[in-house]
Length: 265
Image (tube, rainbow, N blue to C red; front, side, top):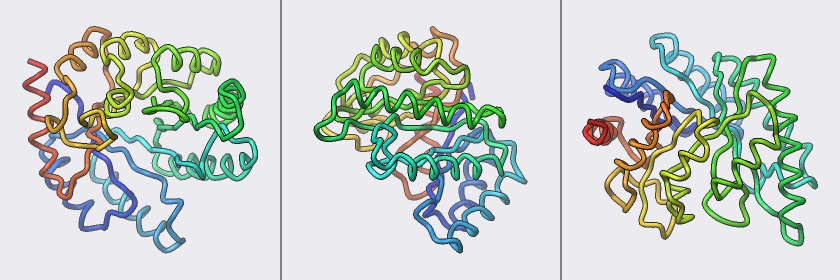
């Protein structure tokens, strides 16, 4: 494989699901990384089960590991009203990642609350991302800010993201490019890659027709993935390509990775 591929493991996956991923994706050497999600919506028993499944997977593999931090309206880093609870949850997730030696954390920048200005939201998010970056630093972790697909969310446009990352001004704060989000926002993906070239650390790949973030498989929408891969090669990108697509079985990801390999040739 010319590229390094990554698959996601949602916390609703069972032990059998994760063993299936290992047999179909990891053991054959087709995928080199995984992005997991902090199970904050599960009870203690559910969290322990998820933790045990991941421990078993990581003990028998050398996967490059990424954790996606909590996101959504209840985890809005731009909302100061509930920020104490949000930061507490984020730091619990960072501690969870540390258990597995995870060094890469995907994070959403948050969104503009009703009756609040863009500037207020940006300033709040920048301040809170700095707080989390400083919390991560002793663990050697990098926070990777993901681009979003439209207002009221922050970091929709490449220049906006670049401004945001420079304003945060922390060496362990990087960028994630989500192709599905950028396409829904009708952004030029090559321009996105080139604008973020000094920060780009991780990539989410999924397809859509620009009407919604469908998390569709490669080829199901209108994204030019050849253009994306050429742009990534142009900047010397060395990170993972995470297939963040809806799927039921691990083997459904294999032809997608092989299709991307052909586009890389």
